[in-house]
Every structure is written in C-alpha cells, then in structure tokens.
Length: 381
Image 1 (cartoon, one colour):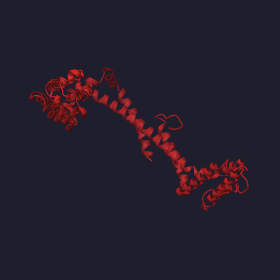
Image 2 (cartoon, one colour):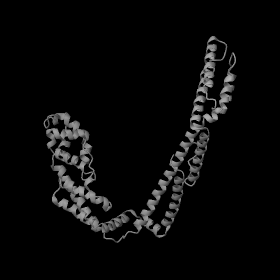
Image 3 (cartoon, helix red, strand yellow):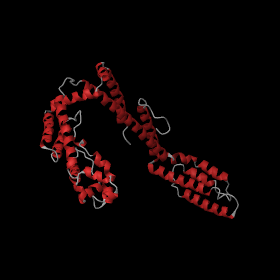
Image 4 (cartoon, one colour):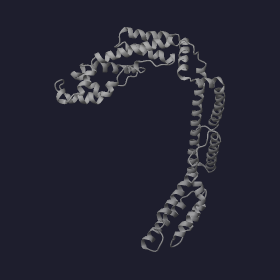
C-alpha cells in the first residue's frame, strides 16, 4: 500500500474493506454535486490558481510593467469569475477572491488572501484527484489480496501433492515404465550422435528446421546466418565436425580447403556453441514421465521426427513406450509411484502419516477462503 507498510495476510480483508469504503465515500460526495459540476469547479479552481501563480510578483508594486500586469490579471480573473455558472458550488469563494483585487494596487497579501478565500472551493475541486487516489489505493490493496491468495493456493497445491504422492503404491513395478524409456533414450542418443557425425551440415540443419512443425519436440532454431551458409556453400555438404575444425584454422590454412574463409568463419565460428550443443536432448523422454494425456501427443510427434534419421529399431523402442502409455490407468499408477519415489522424502512421508499435512491443508484452505470472500465482496473497479 502506498503510504503505509503492506498489510499482512490476516489484515488484508479489513484493509480491502477500508479502501473500498474510502473510495465509495469520496465517490458519493462527487455524486452529491454531480460529476460535471465537480469537473467544472475543478477547472475553474485550476484556472484561478494558475492566474494567481502567474501574476503574483508581477502584478504588485508601482512600476509601469507591474501596472500593466495588474490590469491584465484583474481583467482575466474578473472574466473568469463572471463566466462561472450562478449555481456553481462555492461560487461565492471565487467572488470573494475577486473582490480582494478590486483596488488600484495589489500586494502579496492580496494574493495570499485570495488563496485563502478560494480554500472553500478547493475541497470540492480536489474531489476528483481524491477519488483517483482512493481508487489507486483500492486497486493496490486488491492486488495484494490476489497475490496473497495465489501464494496460499500454491501452498495448498504443494500439500495436496504430498498427500497424493503419499497415497502412491511404492511397491508398484515402475521398471515396466522405466526400462522402455531408458532403452529408448539410450538408443535415440546413439542414433542422433551417429546422424550428426555422418550427415552433412546441410542435412542436419534441414532436419532441425523441419522439427518446427512438431512443437512438442523443441529443437532450438538454427541461426539464420548459419542455415543460409550451409544451404548455399560447398562446405555445407560436409559434416558438422569438419566445419568446426575448419573454423579453428587460420585464414591462410583454411584457404586451401574453402573458397571463402571469411564467410565460413562468420557463419560457423560465431555459431560454434550452437553446433556443439546440438544433441538428442529434445528427443529424450523425461523421468518421471509426463502424464499420459500429454505424453501420448509427444510420443506421436517423436515417432515422426525420429523416423527421419534413426533406424527402425530405434523407432521400435519408442513404440514400446507408446504401448505402455495406452493402458492409461496402469501407466498413471506407475508414473505416480515413480514420482513418489523421486520427490517424496522420508520426512515428508512421516509428516503426511502424522496428519500434520491435513491440518496444514485445513488451515490454508480456511485462510484462502477468507481472501476469496473479500475479493467477491469487493469486486474490481
């Protein structure tokens, strides 16, 4: 919150109610006068104070220039007051300020007195700014409530996850799931390494670029300068390892191998890290695996992508994983067991078993409910 320390989670519902009440109070005051009336008064007050600020010090004294400024100020201020609607709230304050200037010479005291007489109008004129500030404060407190609620929901999800994992069958035969995934990961890693070593750089980058059609595979896009070079230059027909070796040659030595050493260095040397890091990572499956609802789509894409460069026996290992995923109920039981073994510590299991997690969940849900009620009672503005 703007002028005070942020409210604690416990205090936030009351802080939101207070900010809402402050906003509604000033909004109701504006409604009493009417929005347009307050705007008109604010415009008149701003114009009056601007004239005071502009001419104070210039319309006082006895010099010729001072007298000229005095006449201009008196005319402009008088015209402003005469043009005000008769029913404008606190019109008398403007007239009282103008009366102070009905004399032959002005002093600093006259300007100070005029400002004092306009004070009655300033309260109403400031209502619009006051409402803007109250609205900003309300929105900020409401965002604090939303953030606190998001934090609580995250904690609730964490506790619910502990309960879910604790309920997993830790004796489930997860090797039925792990073995085909490990077999595939090893096979695809070897196949991609062989492809990278044997294929031309042009073929390799064409393959990577083609995976753009498979968003669940996720190879990083080849740099455009590198892609363009290997597509249009003779060295692009050689394997990546050879290009990287060329890029480390001196220009005089490289001149014996390629027609344009500078072009090769610009395209390859500047993208050396990309080429070296290009591996089978995007093709491997995670452990523990994703839920079946996500994994089956990724597997479909991988079958298409891996089949572009790998032998059929590698694709067959991928199909073995697909066959496990098809039995969704068993797959999810094995997957949850794998996650529990990976994520759940002995201390966490003991905490769940003791009932402490359920107690924490009850407390968190109650606290979240209070914040949800506060947001429902005080909607966005």
